[in-house]
Length: 401
Image (cartoon, rainbow, N blue to C red; front, side):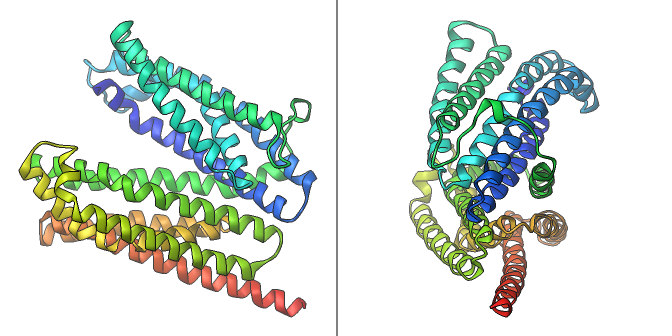
């Protein structure tokens, strides 16, 4: 476990970067599709897949070669270093499959099919668990077995999605002989995707800083926050779907130049997301002792976790507003603006406010309150920018008429 943990931060950053680039791919395809430009849609698909293959292979070679040096740089403990190196070097063999999966998933999301990638992800999640058991318990390969299981699952998920695209889905069809990179298309993908990937990395840094402050409170508090974050996913993951839907919806309607529809759809997504979040939050708060007790068998820790949830869950309805407006802005091509707001509110402001509150109050309630405060800052910033951009687009559209 320590060997896997020692390399997890680097792996998360690499995967997060290419997840962001796949979001850029999704926006470009959705905009081209919305504009009814089939040729550009096909070029975007084939450019993204080709770039994913080349980038994945280069990343694999570089990462495998540099893994020992990176682990030394991160000052991995000597007793952990050999196993961490083995894990990283095997894991990074899956980079071509991981990057291609993200590109294929982004393409399917662009045509409104987010269900297929989700089903593949769930299937491969169960497969990963089964292969972990096989390579750790039946065939005792240890950490190497865990990495091999991940490699195989990433390859299977990539193969399934590429197979679907090769057969064709709603007019989107991958053809081997058309593989190649269009420079202008790739620039558009990276212009949107790199800021999205970079903000993922920055948020990871922000979370690491938050964890640093939490670690200063004590063992019970650390366990309480760890338990809280596990349950929080029940609210957080559905909200991510709101951002993805807003991005695809805004991208397609930007291509069609239907900005009035973007405003209406984004507001509807924000309202629906907030309503669903409120229902989930109420349910979790009413059953908090039972739900949190499933993850840890310690009454004191459960009690602290409920205090944290009592501070954050009532305000979680703010998050879908942030995701809806932020996703719509990315879908319209304003990825850099989205990145600036995310970094300013979810990283810089969060760490600064946390340092202040932690010093003045030094309580878990103070740490927990940082989350709704920064959600509100980000949501207001995104909403103001979205309103400014969409009203400007609509006015320009009316002037042309």
